[in-house]
Amino acid sequence: MCAFANDLDNWEGGYIVAGVEEENGRTYLLKGVLAGKIDKYQKETLKKCKLIRPAYMPIICKRQAKYT
Image 1 (cartoon, rainbow, N blue to C red):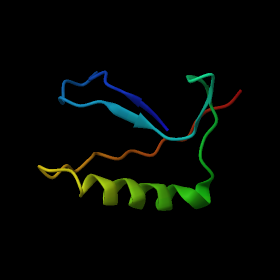
Image 2 (image 1 turned 90 degrees about the horizontal axis):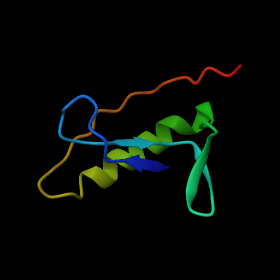
Image 3 (image 1 turned 180 degrees about the horizontal axis):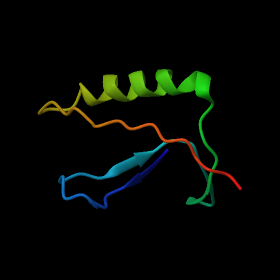
């Protein structure tokens, strides 16, 4: 996972991207997530967000990468 604090849509938040690979502490490759694990990762993320006070509900979007 990789997190970005950039708020491109002015929603006062950032982005968390699953399926990235790192080397020496730096993100360098968008690798993707196996289709069979997406729902598990989404449920785990929502469960952790419920621990935050005040409560936080993320907007979750699934995107399919286009590989050439």
